Length: 317
Image 1 (cartoon, one colour):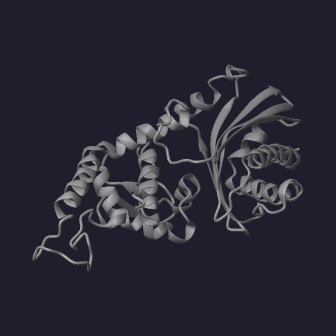
Image 2: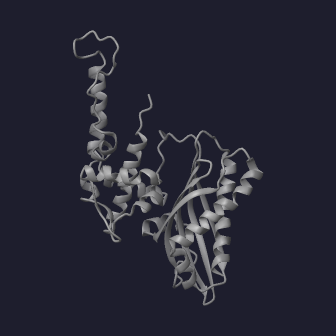
């Protein structure tokens, strides 16, 4: 038995987590922001968010300034309610042994055991709030969360990346470009396509990195995210004009590969005519029916970030 959330339940929890992140600063989330931040498929994102609306966990507002937001603080929302918004009631109204033989008229031998097990799961989820989940997520983002021994990960999928480039342009121009989600989408899209030639030379059997669709979200980085990723890099931190941005994208490739980024971009002024742009964070790769070589994935992710920086510099200069 594979005791885990269904895809729909998974996406509902991720979407609730995205809304919890927005609740801290009173903002709302657009569908595209949830897609880029949490890797929820664009095709189902509106349905998933409506699951939260129908259960009263979230509310929506239409229009240019609209979006989705929680109806109350994350510490007032139980994880049981969120999970059941996607999975339905976590209790069975059918015999645990299905249509098999049963020695009792209405209760099978597994009834009490199964009831105890499902009650225990419900109790844990009832005692845990969305704030608890958010706290753990922020700790993971900042690198301060210890991965438990019970982790289900069998191979490295989150690849740490770090690189920077000097740009012969004033810092204001670089900042305007980086803050433009459409410009950053163009850069990421082109670089995923460009990196495919390297994939072919390293291992032509791996899925293509050429993107068929890509959504990007750029917003000012939180202090927790900045400290978590740049805690060992204090260079230029005191220079005037230094700005930080959380940059996330969710890409679907022509080979049914999903590539997601959690990056912090740092724009630094060197002088009036020169700037630096740093990218740090992680690239997550989710494959379908293909087990990629870990060293090849790392080389591709590293080369991808280097290609992004060069392309960005070329377009700005």
